[in-house]
Amino acid sequence: MTLDERKKRILESIIKDYVETAEPVGSRAIVKKHNLRVSAATVRNEMADLEDMGYLEQPHTSAGRIPSESGFRYYVDCMMERENLVEDEVELLQKILKDNLQDWDEVIQSIGNFLSQVTRYTSFIIVPTVKFDEFKYIQLVPVEKGKAMVIVVTDTGVLMHRRIDIPQSVETKELQSINEVFNRLFARKKFAELRKTDLQSLRDELNQRKKVIDGILEAIENLTENTGEEKVVISGILNMLNEPEFKNLDKLKKILAILEEESVLKALLPEATGDTVDITIGRENRLDDAKEMSIVLAGYKIFGEVGRVGVIGPVRMEYWKAAGTVDSVRTIIDEVLKKHY
Image (cartoon, rainbow, N blue to C red; front, side, top):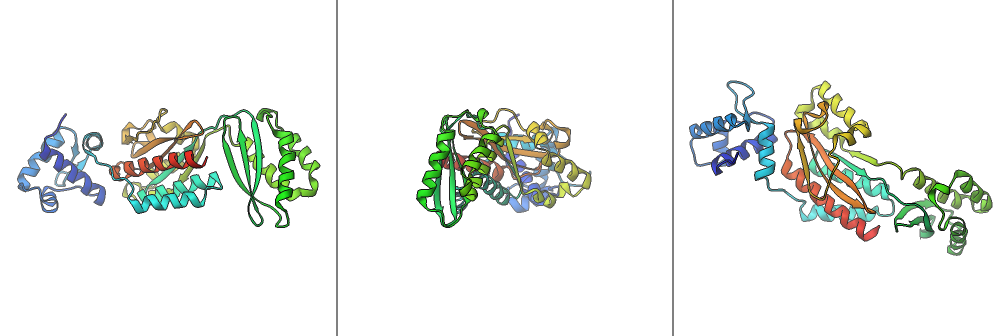
């Protein structure tokens, strides 16, 4: 149902005030705060109409109104203007990513922390299963004194980076000779063919360079063991405690149970996620225990696969800020991955 401009402005005013205060909003407060240029009586009549349409609710007889889930949905679909990251926030995120590019796990954790801090909600990032079949080559590159980068290139062109410690006495020429040994064994070898016994035989062969080899083998073992399942990174769980809706211990326990179980969280999210922002509100969620929260998420691409990034919060959410921030972060992730990975 399409609303006229006055009803839209009143609905938006109630949503903004309710999100800010978590309290029902009265007609006099709207007139005073939002300069609607109509009387409180007119606003009350419009609020009554919006309630009849299902966009507002009156929790108590003498109280003001609050937005219903239908009201939030109408606002999100028909009225909302996103607030994207400002220039300073974009520059901050780009710097955070640049400082952590040597370690993909650090990149993901940094993005999650940034997203939860900016939105003040709980963020999640799902890293998809990366599909590749065989090694193409391995490179060991010195990055600073006592540090080297293990780079694994696969048949799909995927670059896996991991920083390792090496003895400060190890020279670049020695790293090059270790590279040659590794590539003689691993080049064009199927991942399925690599077993711990193969890695152990190489460790034995190069025992005199044990510390360097152990670091490389640990990186490779970590790579082969962590490519079979999606990875879920949660940040800002404590932000839930700041929301009045979750002061009730039973409600909070249900939310935390969802966030603590990766399989439950993944089951909650829509299967198909594209490069547009998707918002589910309250009872639109597929799990009963998630009916009092909303999810804002979008997809991003990594190595040909689709991951997901988003935030979880109460139904009384700053959707305009959450949607704009998630979209900005998704875009920056895509840009960083294309440029550096």
